[in-house]
Length: 128
Image 1 (cartoon, rainbow, N blue to C red):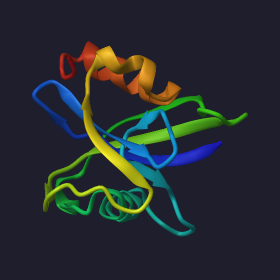
Image 2: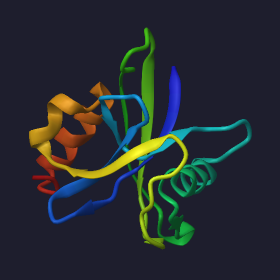
Image 3: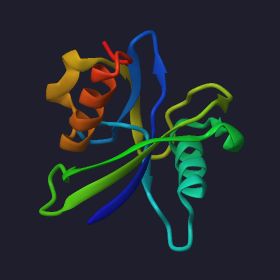
Image 4: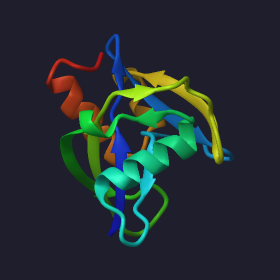
């Protein structure tokens, strides 16, 4: 099982997403936990590394945990998702090639676990 933490940031019915260098699939921003890290520690570190913004720890709220087959790997991924406020301006950093705003029209461009998350958000009326 791949254990990942993701940031859910919605704006005008769209969700912030990222595409890594050399990849054709978009993923929600976030990443794998390092040894000894809490969910919140992972969220703060990964979002700073990928998007160059700072998560406001006190505002973080668990949105849900989702499991599906990992894209391109013979294992499952567990994605624990949080919403949170942030400070700063988005700048793609490290392995991130592109930052974009996706909707349910983009289901063919995202990972299987992200499809579950998109469906959950759409059912809640939060994602177009």
